Image (tube, rainbow, N blue to C red; front, side):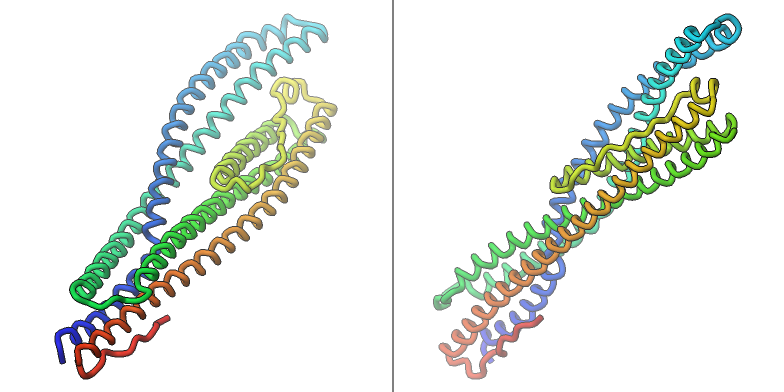
Length: 366
């Protein structure tokens, strides 16, 4: 058996081994590229969020001081010295304004803290994924280099022209590029769907909170007392915070996939300490109960919209996965066709040189 015949037999086995390694790791290079971009984006968001947190904390502290100062310096004086409905209304209006500004600042800071925590968790997971992707990318690059080296060693030197080989090499290159595009798009669609899932979880928590607020508001209308009022306000604050979280996640998903639509507005009136607790009566209780019912209806509508958005995104994922599978199949077909052309060339070279026994016939493997 000639040296060339032996080389061809050895090349066939090695070629199959390297192609199998490439099939297993084809996804890695493009996924790693997108992963690195995602990590850079997360780090930028974290830096911006940290700056925003510092700003919001300063505002919250200022508003808290104003609120406490007004409350502590005026409540007793008002209760003992002020009289008449105008004075009462003026005091309540001013107190509610101070309280509202403080609660809004506190709510924004709380939402920013949760966003910072979620971004940190996402970064940790992305960096963990990066380690795995780097390993598979290294395997892919190593296999590709070995395959290129193998082909160069076989086709260098005085070999006859190979009809169709140059065209098939170009086809493999284009198929590879298209596969990378499809793989990157699938990663994008999956990430958007994952974030929509986080938005759905936040909105479901908000709905649970608004249901709790409704129950407590109902009891409050029948004399629930100050404790019931405070529990109701706590449930409303939690609902508002979770709505902020859902909105934040939805905006992030829309940034990744602009086809995702925004949800209708959800307004949550958290009431006012002075009018709802200190000046509590059946009329203020009924008015607040109606406002909570309105918020519950808005939240239910938004939940239905989010379910529809998630279903559409699942369909986008399915379509992207189908395109990736087809692109992978086309890439593998192009590789196999290039391998077939070269295998036939091996046989012709062996025949032209009178090698005797021909190398094994090419067999396409699934």
